[in-house]
Length: 242
Image (cartoon, rainbow, N blue to C red; front, side):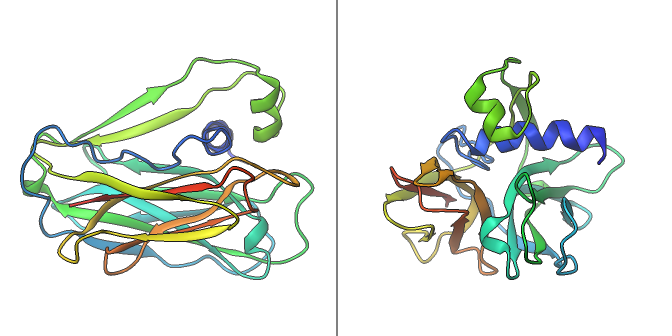
């Protein structure tokens, strides 16, 4: 496994395992204003359905557009056991804007096959003035709870990403649901688009639950979430809508 990916995957796996929003707050509203216009979703088609782990997808935005969100979807017979380990927007000079996603099997592997599909939410560059991606890192630690969730015993940290632009008039909405391993949330207004997605999970009856799929639908009206189990205290699903 690529060492760089392993570090990133562990960081985000820990983020998903501690009731923290997985791909949350990727668009930050800096002032009330019109929503971003011209949004659309691109897809990096699914990998082969097999037992290879980890799997990677990078959904790209066309030239003259910026990535403002994205997601990942796991499919196949073993989908319910597969964990999203990284969700990362990428943008910078000399490279194509894209949304990178990684997923892997839990320690010990699984008996079935699975596939990974990636998504990016893209916006025209001129509709997001002041666009920038701001990373935020936790401190390194060796907390036993975190190391169990991440599947390692050394020190590690979580990296979260905020996508910022001015002006953006988007607001977060969503719900907390109990007794289920999957959920969806549709923007409250039919004229609004999903700008980004978020979710949170926690321990279940058989141990920690993880994000398995978290992605916007093709019409950018609904966020879909699937977990690897039913969390005891419920799940949270969020959409950034405008």
